[in-house]
Image (cartoon, rainbow, N blue to C red; front, side, top):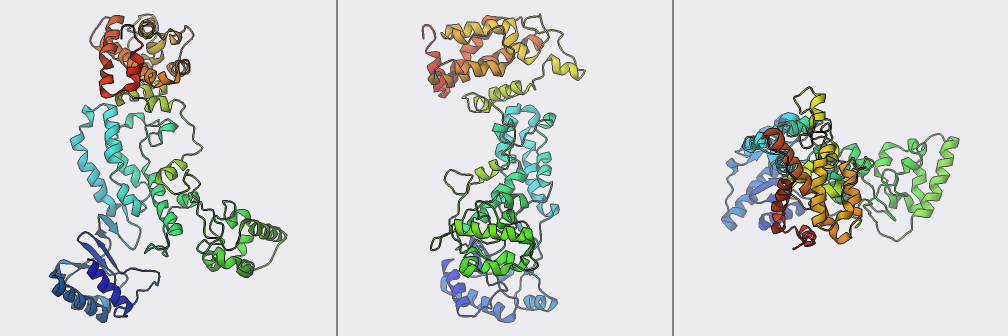
Amino acid sequence: MEALNAIVSYACRANLLQSIASQQIKHRISFYADDVVLFLRPSSQDISTVVSFLDFFGHATGLQTNISKNSVTPIQCGEDELATIAALLPCEIKSFPCTYLGIPLSIRKPSNADLMPLVDKIADKLPGWKANLLSRAGRLVLVKAVLSSVPIYLMLALELPSGFSRQLTRRGGGSFGRDRGMQMERPLQYGSLGILNLETLGWALRIRWLWLQKTDAARPWAGLPVQIHRNAKALFDVAVVYGESVKFWTDRWLLGKTVAEHCPSLIKLIPKRVLKRRTVAEGLTDRNWVSDIRGALSVQVLVEYLQLWNLVDEMLQPDTDDKHVWRLSRHATYSSKSAYDAFFVGSITFGPWRRVWKTWAPLKCKFFAWLVIKNRVWTADRLAKRGLPHPAVCPLCDQAEETIQHILISCVFARQVWTLILQELSLPAIVLQPGCTRFSNWWCQSIKSVDKNLRKGLNSLILLVAWEIWKHRNKCVFEGVVPCVQQVRRAVVESTVWCLARAAALQDLLRRAVGA
């Protein structure tokens, strides 16, 4: 393939092939594995030249080209040009969209019909999931690992139509449809399950092209316009000390803002043609940016003009290179994660998210703890609101109305379990007090009251005990088991086999137990 690329490059340099309409297109041929794309003008001379050097390449290497197995996709060609192509190339003539490397390429924005193969690809994976037989924790893993990852490759290149990401989510079987009141597609720190928002992820992924366009001018497409959503453009921020490629009027190079943000009245007097082309380097040379201002000057325009004059003098220094800074990352370089997270800045944070999701424990226990803190567990209080059958009182203590907060910390039975286990671990200081009414508050206070080297293990233990209390409650309700503190204790002790799964922090905590 390197030899073929060298032949095409030589043909371009020797003017054996006519230049393509845009001088910014630097490469005519693209290789990937056994796929090749070649761009050329629909003229008899160019087509004959290509056929000739393909024959030459075949005789030299033994790799003969079967033109009949290839295809031609015209780009804005007339009837005469199509006739020329059909006469000289004995292969199929296809129209857009065409598929290359799994991506539907088109000269227009792809429609929903063009992208339906992606939806079908995801839908084909769903029957084998048997979601009704999976726990919600299991469904969460599958959604994150499959549903959210399949479209990433496509979203890197294309902006999906509005609402297409929601269609993908619906095809996912609505794995968490019963919790529609909760925002699932947000990062963990904002109280969600960490499922990717596909629309926002697409914006974050395609900011990559804006960043590379600024920082790597050697890219073949660097001089071409990049189509990107306005929300992604607004996020893209570049700080420039002196610019050869940075646009004077439209890029963010003055204190992290554009000239339009500093001077909204002045910018209206700049012709659109100049607005998009003037670079910082050109504008600073002999102060050419002043000559871009056209039209009548109002008092406000004069004020903004003087303000811009001062800002330019203070910000820029000659004889320095472009400086591109991605302000959302510690390393000042773009990453899709930092861009994705930035779209959620300002949202209400979920305080205990680290304790819930970063603790070493099975995912089902973490998911249960998340439901507890969100008060979304199906206990009697929630069942009663929906008119569903429910226990009249707590099945563990038979004294008070059943809520998830009562079951875990207010119930007499639960307090006995916590007291027994914590005393065995020599942690009486965090035993439940009569005033504790919320599980998350007690959890937070308990972690603060122990040494830092024990906190990770205590987090795992609290999740374990809460999970076993909830399982025992379910046995009492659905299997008619009599509440027994010692039975819960034995279940907790048996579950400490987590230590065999390298739960090192929990193992260190258990060594404090008497006789360990």
